[in-house]
Length: 151
Image 1 (cartoon, one colour):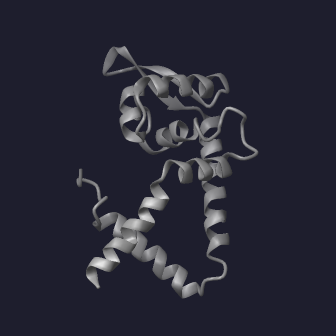
Image 2 (cartoon, rainbow, N blue to C red; image 1 turned 135 degrees about the vertical axis):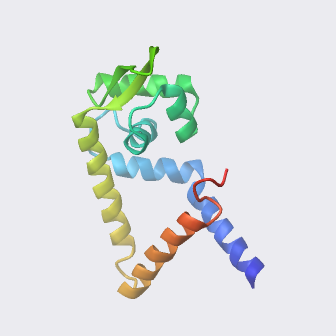
């Protein structure tokens, strides 16, 4: 039974982590928002919301993109006024990407849309099942193979 459970979870995670699944979700979350925010730029703006100010290289490592790709996508977000570049106080030669107030507002909107989409998908579940799922998913994230420090 243990092997079957692990395999079932691994299969489900494989579907969730597919690039096409993420792109579809990002497209859904960014629908109707600022034109510069789409399935390609969403990981950059969302990553900055999680990390705070970061270099393109550091952000790239966080979100799984190379520095050049992050820089190109950040250019679009900067032109739209959603992020800005600032000198790194720790290294005068380096630049940090940081969200503007408008960028934070876009992230807040996407987070609301994601929460609403999740609530909609759980609407047919008994409330206790949805609450148990949320609790156990948080536990799995905190304690499972993806927990911080498990590289």
